[in-house]
Image (cartoon, rainbow over all chains, first blue to last red; front, side):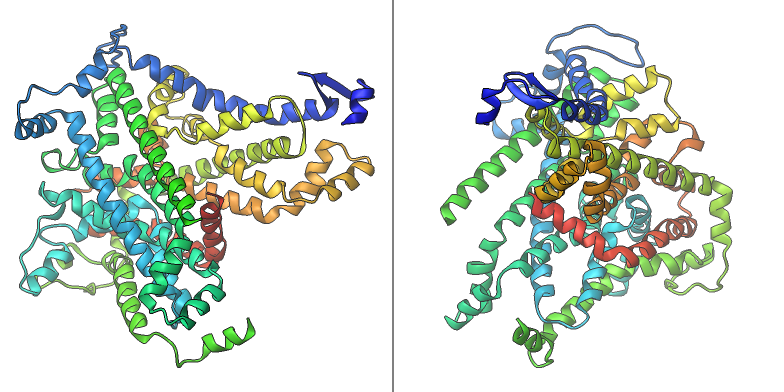
Length: 327
Length: 281
């Protein structure tokens, strides 16, 4: 450093922004980053600027309109009809398609996050025990993760068929009441949730399992010597040590379940019975590509982005606080 | 360490209750695959028979033949393979160059570049898809491979993954190469890439799997049947086959089985790539 200050210009170096760089590193470095810059401009920077602009217009593919309408789209999406008590407020939320879709997404995310994380943790703890055929068992939980989504949802659509589906046939055989699964507004969302748990739980099992296996034996042995039960061992030692992974799983869970689309679009292409499986991305897709209302859909997608952003910020703040507490 | 290993392999402290429970769950997890394979041979009669028939009455490949009659299945397969391979190759190639440039070279503005890349990871496709659709259609790239591939090239995640490995290469090694007269390009091809093959393979695997299951963008950007990828083709098969479940199962077998076979061979690497992304957080 000192040397460079004394001799401001060495051979093959260049001074930029008051710092010394090697000329060939600067040239090659910028050359190598150019493809990344090009794709960032076309797939990130330009679209983000465009989507913000579009959200203030009434741009419609079908009507061919393109006019600046200010905050009209946001007002349309967010405005509720008048209400004076809680019941009316609830009705107002249900009547607004955007809020209703957001609400269903929040419900789905909450259920999926809780069940998926809970089950994954439970199975990971089980698999971490000294059981025979461990590798085979782990693979069976993981297999649905790698198989293609659309192909596996075809299997489950047959499972859910009210007449010839094996689920109802098994229920009938056991003398239990049957369900309409995907074809009734009260069960459609839960049916897709069940499928997505089967499909996805293995991913988090792998994450938790690797975390459990990284826990040093000395902690476990020490706790055992102190007479800790299995239950205490888990909640007092293992679970706190898994915190970074739990936090990652929850963060990814929030992001992924708020932008879920494929399984809903395949299993219930029209938003399900009485729109009961129309989640927020399905709403945006419908507005943009079925109705051609690009402006309104852009505004909705930005609102969705804000929700995801706020949730992940809250999550990381809570996590940072807890980590300090542990220390 | 050794004592622990011996202890683990004794049968005495094995958890048989946990094992029994896990086996039941494993059967449930695998049941859909078994059902799929058996049912792909069923006749329409078998499907509608009551009490239900689990094993097909005759084993023939009619349903498989029917898939090829109803949709250009091989073409969809080809479209999926082509787009996935090209996307993965582009993503990894661009990421290697960028990671090398950011880790081993010094130029002004690196921190800003990394910050922009990091923020791009926070914006989901659903936000950018509308302007991107308008852009791609104004360029006349709807129903083309370029239209499917280019907008899906995101490299931030794989670049950061590779950067953490590139940074672990000892500086001595790079200095030695410099003394031998290697320029930045040769240091990358002779020192950095050969020493991080495993990491590049992991990143490629991660990228490949993400691209293979891609759904929303190909759905938006293809109208022409011939440019549909496998997931989109299957979705339309399902909607057009008027609930001929046994035919859908034949299509599902042909889509899922190759993946399961690859899975059996690459499970270790796959698990590794997933745990790594968990650790990276």
